Image 1: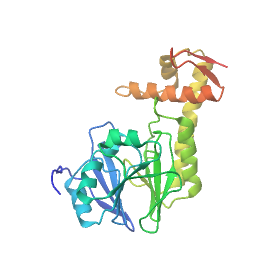
Image 2: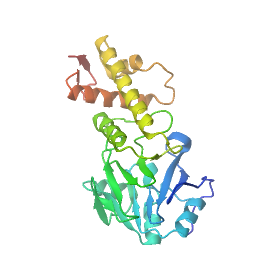
Image 3: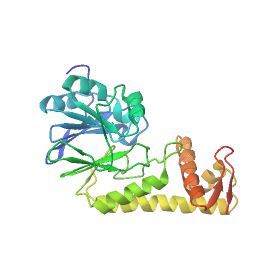
Image 4: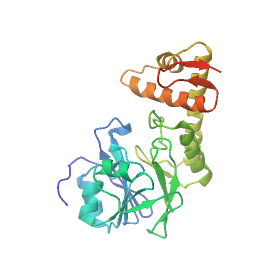
Length: 272
């Protein structure tokens, strides 16, 4: 293959039949890279871009399928290139074909949904984990679960409006926890060898933020900016937009549950 960057990517074998290749991206993401994964030398997941290491890994494999955990720009950048050069079958989530094509620049060949098994290594099972993005899925393999942006080893995951759905995100975390994977293979950062503890930590983080948002509203915060100022106790320099979008996602969830009244058009919020 040709046309790849020369960035160092620290290719690693993380489990039997699973190779991880971090790919540098320009988007604002943890570690500045997105992890691409090769499963059983046949399935390529989340090729964010091209690097020498990923080219070499793909060349050494027999890639027959390409898929993404979700169609955010930092996960789809090289889907079209690798699909064209390997003649692989391109998959996407049912109901999101147009979204996928617009992001990846290629139409999917096949679609999957919850429970679909991609015919690789005895079957790679698709798990519905929408929340970070509406089309988000995870891929369950024997050596671990490729979980995209559901979980990270340290810190937290962005669940930001207008796409973020906190109800869906918490359900996805609980589903992963219940499936007791041997390890989680995240979209960003290192492999997660304590998946259940990590899921519990991330759930607790979101519920703690939710309590802060509810308290802020009950104490008089009447709009989104006031909620952000009261609910975050850290310097938000450079992340103000993300904090605001996350607060909106929390308010949307709380409004659905009848715990606050939130008007997304005006940004007004009142306790119930």
